[in-house]
Amino acid sequence: MKPSMGNRKKTKSMFGLIAVMVGFLILPGFLSEGWISLVNEMLILALAACGLNLMLGYAGMVSFGPAGFYAVGAYATALILIDTNLPFALAFAAGPLVAAASAVLIGWFCVRLTQVYFALLTLAFAQIIHTIIFEWYAFTRGDNGIVDIPIPQMLKSITHYYYFSFFIIILCLALLWLIIKSPFGKTLQAMRENAQRAESIGINVRLYQLSTFVLSGFFLGVAGSLFCGFNKNVFPNYAHWIKSTEMLVVCLLGGIYNFFGPIVGSIVYLFLDKVITGYTQFWPLVLGLIIILLLLFLRGGIAGFIAERMALRRRRGEQA
Amino acid sequence: MFRVEKLIKSFGGLMAVTQVSFTLKKGEISSIIGPNGAGKTTLFNILTGHLKPDSGAVYFKDQEITGLSPHRICRTGIGRSFQKTNIFPRLTAFDNVQVALMAWQKRTRNIFQKADHFYQKETDEILGSLGLGDQKDRLAGLLAHGDQRLLEIGITLGTFPEFILLDEPTAGMSPEESHKTMELIQQIVRSRNLTLLFIEHDMNIVFGISEKVRVMHFGSIIAEGTPEAIRANDQVQKIYLAEEV
Image 1 (cartoon, rainbow over the protein chains, first blue to last red):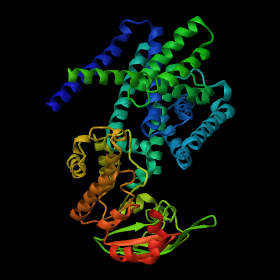
Image 2: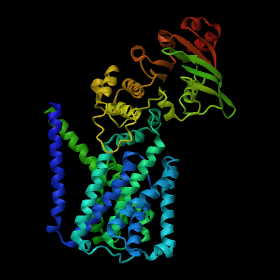
Image 3: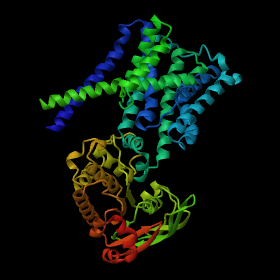
Image 4: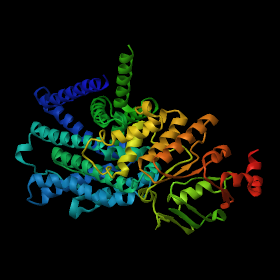
């Protein structure tokens, strides 16, 4: 009895997933370009937040510096496109790779610490990245940012770029899904729950934390590269702690213990941003209130809340 | 198979472990008793690599393991449980044991395969032997206290140890629960042909299943022998049994 019920549930969620994806694919037929841009931005932020959440929600490593790797990805792609004649594909691939490489270096130091010390060190490194980008005019153009980045003619239309990033993001999310369902992913969750115990069953906790750090840096780098092509301009504030905070808020808003949490969080966050800034210039104030309400009443985030409700309903259904 | 030589560990001016030496034979079931603060858990922490000794050496299967990190000591075939319940609360009971099996078989580096199907049989077997079979889909943190203690042993067994160290496996259990648990542990140790060293507070339990008892007091082992010999030892009675009564 049980497995067949599990299968039915599986087919149902499979069906839902495909429906959502088809929905995203046909969106450009219904929405104006302005809205498609917003959806594109939501998806990119969703990927960044999911990359962060591999560390935050699954491995229990609270990082205050995800924007650092996001910016490294964006700048790597931007600099290659503006300073060299290398093809776009190469410049695009370089973003996540350079971000992952910098995550190896920075992570090597960070995983030596835990909890609040770890968090502060990630923040410090991200601010170092910000300062380097901000001050090194000869290389990064400093606070002028890099503008008018040339991208292929084919990707210049908003709809085309939307499809391009949709494809890359779905690919990355599928990879992240595989990772969290793998033995490696389960190990991360065990480490999150109890690092000391994990060590006593033979897990080299630091090594796994470093691997997570690098994987997370990689996906943040993909998001950065995507945003570079989307915006065609990059600026030092991509590495700023405010950007890191935004990613953390997105994760918390959607729910860090749910795979889809950061995606939901990103959509809701940018939607609110758009709607509320239309009415008032006090968006940060509203955001502050949202964070307070979230932390006090909705600790599992939106996705966590929905999942809980659904589980409750299913249990009631089984009893009836 | 397991030998400890002149271990010393001090914290500041306090000697927590003083010149501790002993040897264990394969398959031996023995225990360490002693009043609170005698240094039992500190000794365990040194043996499993959570603390580094100031001096002395630990040998397992003729190999020196002194001062290795916990995950490397685990790899040599030594498993341990902790005095305070030490499980993965927001994973299911099944996942708790399965992750230990995967860690031991070095499958945790596997990043693109589904974890669900790994070691299903082995996990079920371990949970079954502890009587936790019907609880396997519950979150570990929601199990009853006694079951959490058993699950902790299940995690330890997941790493296929040859030698297990249990730190007060029955802490917080009722007397009946304690006896049942110790019987279960004895049964598992025998059937898997393990060597067992455990810390215990309850004298009755210690004397019931230990072949050898060691008494720790102020950081050193002051007596070692069969339960009968320990029961008859004047010094032990003075410092330990008197305190209990």
